[in-house]
Image: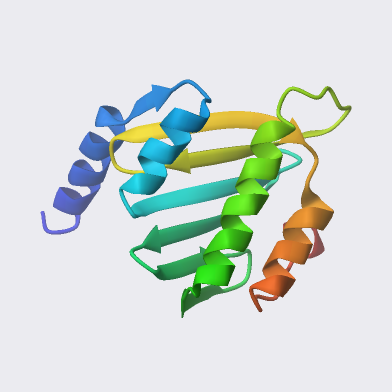
Amino acid sequence: MKKILPLLVFLLLLSCQKELAATSENINAVFDTQDFSIRYVILENEEHRMSFMNNVMAYFGPEETIRKELSYDEAILINTFVQDRFQNRNQTAAKTDQLIIYNDTKKVVFETAAFEKEFETLLQQLDIPYVSAKKK
């Protein structure tokens, strides 16, 4: 019973999550909670996730989880990356990637031009090793 209860609570929280339109206001509403996650979906088969609580980030990559306290400059780097992807969401491209920004109650999903190289650069700037799931 102890193992089932957390699963039921998690499923209940997911069912309460409302998907919102991809607008800057909705994204900022999620960011304002200071307890949110960003899922980076690259070519539909590779996922990386960053979860944030206050000024601490947990990065969940294909091979490892890294926790670190974020500096102001690092937070700006992540925010700029998301903003650039959001601004490029309406450009048509053969390959599209997806960003999912969510917390317990809200979720914003949008597709954008492929960003694997830019994401790799972002992780390097954050001093996080980039490992493609395709290399596994």
